[in-house]
Image (cartoon, rainbow, N blue to C red; front, side):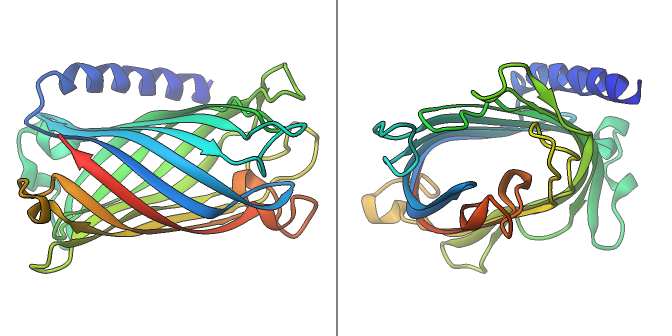
Length: 280
């Protein structure tokens, strides 16, 4: 019953966020590309090369913020089924955060010490993957409290409850994992007066109970961090139009698979990448 009520609440917040996006006070929309040669996938011992093309949007309105990211991940033939040319995956993340201080009309109400504000975040993850042996079809709702720290740029930390399900190729009936929590942080912090910023996210996700095969799942740690350089001045564009950088992903027990068990080294990805973005 609690899960159903939480899902309904999340849906209402999503509707509010989508409506609010049409009256944004500020927004940033961009397309990007990143590339690496050492991606890992559980139960796959190979290093995998991936090109990732993405569309991103973040905006703020009267009562909070919206975040949307759509990735198209194109793998080489090391991530394939029966010798195919490689896997293709679409992964969508949406988050909407309501700021309690803005709703009350008193932003200073929740500002004390290192905190800039307090809010509530809801959203979803959606993915479809084809071409590999698993062929994930993940669906996940998330909801929980958020604190916003008073730093240059932003640093938000949330504790979210996750309701996740999957229906891979081997299990056409959708399987629902146990509801489980995630501690997550997202940040974007300028490095002084330099045209550089330190950005990324960290997710610590608790075990989600039994997997669809009846085995245990493990807690997972996913850290994605990058140093981005504003190269706009080199091409005569306005600031923050063209950005390039170096990115690194550390993902232990990927998707809840034990990297010390049958899932092997592919469930412990350590992936350097290059990244480029164009902001509209």
